[in-house]
Amino acid sequence: MKIHFLGHSAFLLEAQEHRLLLDPFLSGNPQASLGVEEVLALRPSAVLISHAHGDHWGDALTFARQGIPLVATAEIAGYAQKHGATAATGMNIGGTFRAEWGSVALTPAWHSSSFPDGTYGGMPTGLVIELGGQRVYFAGDTSLFSDMRLIGDRDLDAALLPIGDHYTMGPEEAARCLELLRPRVAIPMHYGTFPPLTGDPAVFEREGKARGVDVRVLKPGEETDL
Image 1 (cartoon, helix red, strand yellow):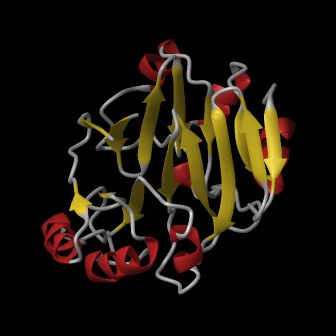
Image 2: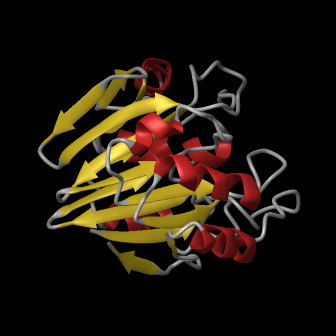
């Protein structure tokens, strides 16, 4: 699997002919390495959304209106359907969605979730994604919580964790998550985009490597192979 970092918390996961787009905050994102039209041209197999905040929901509706399947909580999928999405699947925490490309399971996340217009977005989630025979945990905007140990029991190839602080956990707390998640690779996200997000990826890298995890700090536009 290739993991492409698009900036903030937006990623493309790629394996064989499939690409999955995660939390596609591209328009208005000062870090974004690709624009909406460039990503549309790649024809993602699905768009996966962790929660409804604008810096994660982002351009999801643009993709969903183009027929690209959207997968998220029932509240987010229902909102998308009401606003022109042609293929949106709603699910909930504990459930697993399966498709030709693999699967995604929703996990709890400690945060909040509402759309930019104030509409309730359901519970925030994390995503456990299986693609190309590998398993990635995309944490969304969660803080540290002890049940991450159960997520770690899934034998994770990678964990994508927010480190920016202020709205999410900072790098030290994110590094503590690695003790519970036990991934082979960890990638930081959700830092440096806006002034409050001051978490330092160098701190996360140092603390993660001290815990025996291969921490890879990606700049927007960079990619890594699992």
